[in-house]
Length: 93
Length: 93
Image (cartoon, rainbow over all chains, first blue to last red; front, side):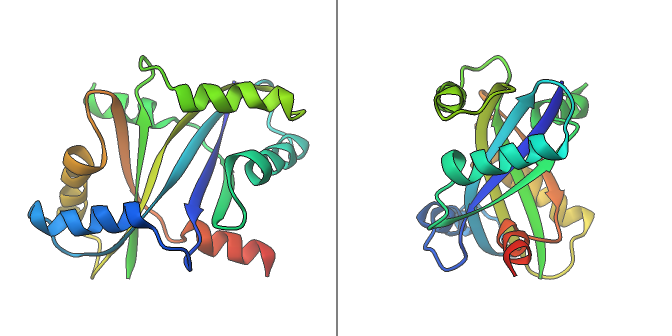
């Protein structure tokens, strides 16, 4: 089973109220040194079989038509061996 | 200016209705070959100055206390040179 990740972020020229809320909360929580925060979405897709160029082209179409809104968001597709859960698991065990 | 990314995903044992909704929509849109979808969050942080181990430890604390809910979510912190917007820009230009 292969894993493909689609990252979706608000375009730089689009306001990002969620990111701004996080940025505003940081100093109140005692954190400094961060000058900007943008919040977007991450999709982890489990793909049957091998990852070929055709499969990636198909997922690119999914990203453009279903997972993102191309008017206000940018997306990026890449293969990733480990899920966030697996990495977190490795850190605690 | 350095960029640090925090990925936050629902833990594997936690239901993910958003991911399930995307998974259910795929066949209706003519896509096949995807057996599971999980939806999480991606934060792009702009950090002033150099990324040291102290800075990363600080961002790890942010991820645990503000950006994620450790009861239901896993997170992962890593340095990333290019934002999704920059990659999308490179693809179209």
